[in-house]
Length: 86
Image (cartoon, rainbow, N blue to C red):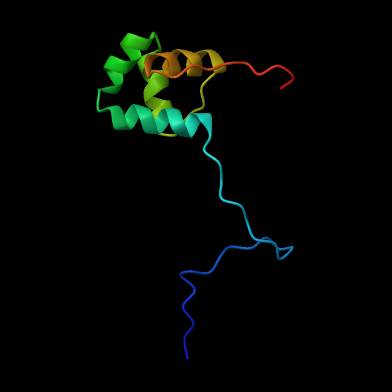
């Protein structure tokens, strides 16, 4: 007898259902860079980000600073805002 676990929900060791992961800023930026279809070199040049930094970020080999994230976000049409008290 076999059991189909494809629809099973993942659980924490405490037995509670695991919440789906929320998207991260890095993940959103990486996805937008890839999905926009423009070459990484062009995005780097247009956003003022070093090409090597952007390439390593998109390929998951490094993180980026908040300043770099802000420049990329602005280039991609996003606005990063500081939330008071956060």
